[in-house]
Image (cartoon, rainbow, N blue to C red; front, side, top):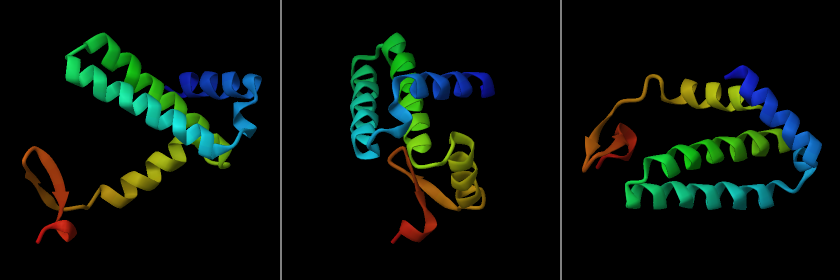
Length: 100
């Protein structure tokens, strides 16, 4: 995984994406997320695999544009959720603080 992240980072630097406007990059994240949703709706596993990969690529670049990296962001998020409690509601995990 480390090698792939580094390859994506290098690719984005070669294209100048690492210095681009991160609000534009966020549009790419949303676009790719929409493709994931479409793949799920169509039950298209190959498109789902591609879409998830594309979302990760766009997030790696978004993190770079904000002087962060994927691992830093993932560690931050995991530290936040690791002790989280809650329950499944209609197939979605809802954290305790959001339960009424």
